[in-house]
Length: 426
Image (cartoon, rainbow, N blue to C red; front, side, top):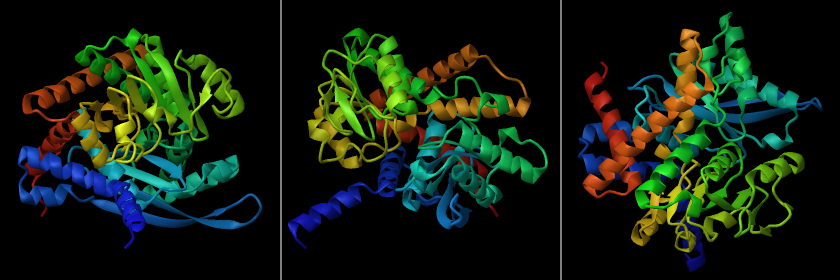
């Protein structure tokens, strides 16, 4: 094989999310001395469901789409995890995301296991009617797995409260009554929780500020770069700006912007909402979608998609602090480089756990038909995120572990304990 071929193979292997998830698990299992039997159980997903389903398009054609729902572990409670619509969705990606959801729920100590779902589709080419038809048909396909006491979906990449409402309504039509707790991230009018839309970005902000305090960084002196200006990235950028940070770089799928003197988040959001993209925003240098990753900054928030920080660009990252807003944005090879350079990294299973935490709040509110104010939701979220960050930091310092490994070890220990206590059936 040529050197070029070997390089391409190595890059493909590094970008394999399932390989990354299992490798991270193996390291955590080594730290806690997990017995071989539990290693075998927790290293694999419990259920993986693949479906191919037809959808009638507006022009009369019928297209067949592929969808997945994977449950990794349900020993601590019902499975919990988002559904994404993206052309690059694959079974291995969904398996990795389901495993990460198990650890994410465990690291913030809420009573859920991990799941994930996805459909291979470019949402941008669907009309609203086609999107609804696809969603309702996919909900019917995975209806044998999901429900308020079994597996509770939520929004993820390219899905939103409207998509969740359609899924909830579809399940309710099948049941013959409203099953509001069947999904989270719904509109407020049909059982959603106040504070849910901003929850993931708010959790990222809470962790970023806690990490800055630990590192002795002052927010009003911190320059922040955010890759991904969707729900997570834009909210994190706005809240970090409110905390005193200067946002110097942002990007979306179409391109990126950089201004060493700062970018006003409110103006960025107005421009994006009007133009549909950040590209062309006046008074900033165009740097490309991946530009914020290597921009001159103190804090980097990768909040786009997975496998963005790799061995190919990790040495070019200038940030002293990385807070992962996306799922799986950093490969193990990049992790090793960051550790050798002394970069402090708050891992995804901790940093972006605000979304699933408030999803848990929404589920609880739906089950008891008693809803909280946004202030109460944000207070409870802040308490859980602060506690979880402190627990992971304590393990990191006591055992001399990077934050990712400390978070993974803490989570695996909790899930292993539940699995051990329940035993094997039969």
